[in-house]
Every structure is written in C-alpha cells, then in structure tokens.
Image 1 (cartoon, helix red, strand yellow):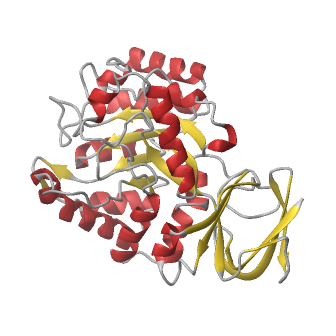
Image 2: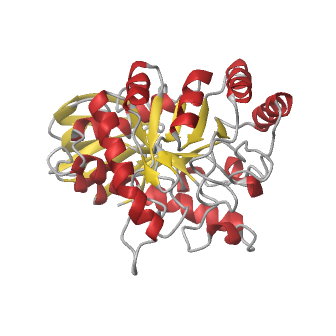
Image 3: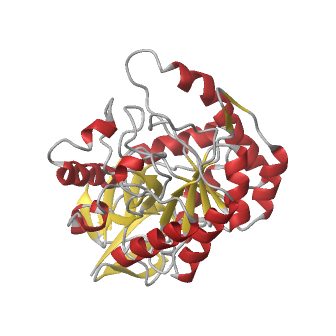
Length: 375
C-alpha cells in the first residue's frame, strides 16, 4: 500500500485540491484531504488514466498502413503501438478494427493499456476495410457475424455504416447498409449484451445508425463527396438522443504538403465538431490513431488541445476522456474516475490542464493498476 499526492486532483468529474490517494492491490482504496504522502508529485494534477475510444493498433501510422498489415511482425508492432498509448497517459484503448482478433490477446499485461477490442469491423463485401476480414451483407449474415464476434470475446461491435478513406473503391459519403441491416446488427449486439458503434461519415449514414439504436457513432463528419455540409436538424436529433459521438479529433504536423483532400475537408469537419458541441451532443474522443502519419499512436492529448481551441470547455474535454469514455466503453465500474474501488490507472501531469490543456502532453507519471510504469 502507498499514497500519492498532487496539488490538484481531477476525479473524472470535478477538480479538487490537496487530495491524497491511497492505493492497494492495484485499486484505489481511499481519496481523502491531506498534504503528506508516500509519493508527493508537488504542483501537478492527478487524473484517471485517459481513454481513447477509437484506435487501430494494427495500423502502423505509416504512409501505407494497409500494406503493412501483411508485413511480418504484426503482433509485435501492435504491442509497440499499445505501449505508445500508455506512455502518453492513455491507460485504456478501444480498438475498433484489427485482423484475426489479434488485439484481444496481445499479452501486454501492465506493460500496456487495457485493450477493449472489436475485432474485424463488420462491412460489406469489398466494402470499407474488407481486408480485415469482417465481410457480411444480408441481415442473417450480419447477425451471424455479430454472434461470431461475441463468441470470440469482443467488447464492442463495430460496423461500417458508410464507406471510408482507406479503402479503394469505397466512399465516405455513401452508406454501405440499409436500415434493416443496421437494425439487425444493433438488435443482435444488444441481445448479446454488447454495445455497437458505427463508422458513419455522411448524414444519411449517421441518421440510419441513430434510428437503428446504435450506442455511439464514429466520425460524424457530414462529408458529401468533396465537401462537408452540416445537417443542423440531424445534429439536434443527436443531441436529444441517448447516443454518443466519438469525434475523430487529433492530428500532428508532418513534413511536406498535406494531402489536398485533408485540406479541403478539415475546416468543415472542425466546424461540425464545434456545431455539435454548441448543440449539446454527448461526445468522447476517438483519435483513429494508426491510420496515417498525422495519426500516431498516443495522439489523444493532441485531440484534447484541438477541442479546447474549438471552444470546448476544458472540464468537459477532461470528462470526455475519462468518466464519459468509461461509460461509452461500459467500464464505469472500474475506469474513468479516481474513487474508492476503482482501478488505480492514473496519470499525473505538470501544471493544471484546466488552465492549459497542453499540460496533458507532459506526463510526470503513469500508473497502471497501481504500478508506476512511466515517470
């Protein structure tokens, strides 16, 4: 048993001051006021370990991540990607697309984040990410695919409602499934006790996922071909529903000129994120880490900075990466808060992230189940 103190403690909901956290057997035993502790990190902030709700450990964040799937050593690259998340203070990741269910059993233990995996995303024949192995077209085939995923032990069902940018012949502004297929997937997932999330870029796909009863929607970018056109009526429906949007926010600068499509679409996507926040849409951050050089693993603190720059309140951004993310991932009994009985997955950062969100990019210490893994 040991104790940790910082000047500030964000407990997953609110910021508190001069708190001491008692840790025993990998869990938080007590949080109480105090000024003395075994580990005193001084003028720092202690937070629950961060949760990235959308990563791809199988993608290497290189210029051609799809081709690299066939290169030898994929499990080793996935383990290294996971460790990069942990080094950034991300103690839980939701992997929303791998090959051969590899993310379910990487054998990292406390040397990596907890991984909540979807396995191969369900997609149409030759549809977006078909090369990961999740093709299913008819309602019955989709139900069978959901049952197979559940039997393999996945934590969430991922479905490609629309096309995407990584797959030749697939288009983000076109949906891949109709209402009946999406409802079949959602009904089967829920019958098996699993949440379901949908990759959806265009308004038509977003609306169908909402109507089908999906628990969350990835991206919600409102892409229409080569532009972005916001549907404010649909945004209002998202805000009124019990659904969470997983914002694909976060990029790092890389040498060279950005791809023309990135330049054309990004302003509209950011404006969509601003509009959804203004409307009160419930949100988390799912960085899509791994899909290219601008999306390296361990990206989540960069996404937080972008949201604050868009006008999001820092306290809401912190909640989105901790307690709200834990709710979306269905791990609120263990993750997302610093409270008695919770896993001692903790991040200490220099300074106050409510005053300067970039403090998240400067971890002083990362604890995984009470074990200090980075400092």
